[in-house]
Image (cartoon, rainbow, N blue to C red; front, side):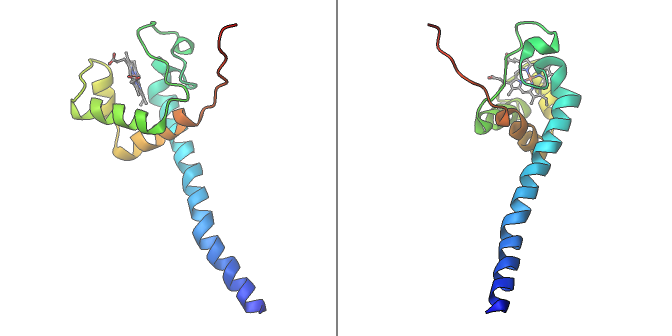
Length: 115
Ligand code: HEC
């Protein structure tokens, strides 16, 4: 019986813990990439104004992860062409795209309709 508990614990550890770690690592790497590459224009929080740049740069805060991945891959492949974003996306590996999308999509916002 005791052995069963230990075995169960080990199985849980193997299956649960690496996933959580992987998520945390993705988020951390995404934050690093956002800080070094994206924040100059989009801000570390995805709000373009905080980067002190022009209103032509879109906010990407709390955007859906899949949407961010799709857009970045489209810039990278040339499906969407933009003088700045296409160059930047070409510098990103698929893993970078995944991580940075994890970061910006994990930021939460509160939505309030005007009264
Ligand atoms: C030099 C400034 C600059 C940097 C640095 C930059 N971007 Fe952009 N980004 C832009 C501009 C400008 C656009 C709008 C492009 C367009 O109109 O197609 C844009 C568009 C985007 C979009 C599409 C948004 C949408 O809804 O269509 C995403 C996603 C995005 N950027 C993510 C990133 C990420 C992630 C990084 C860092 C790896 C990054 N950008 C770095 C300027 C920048």
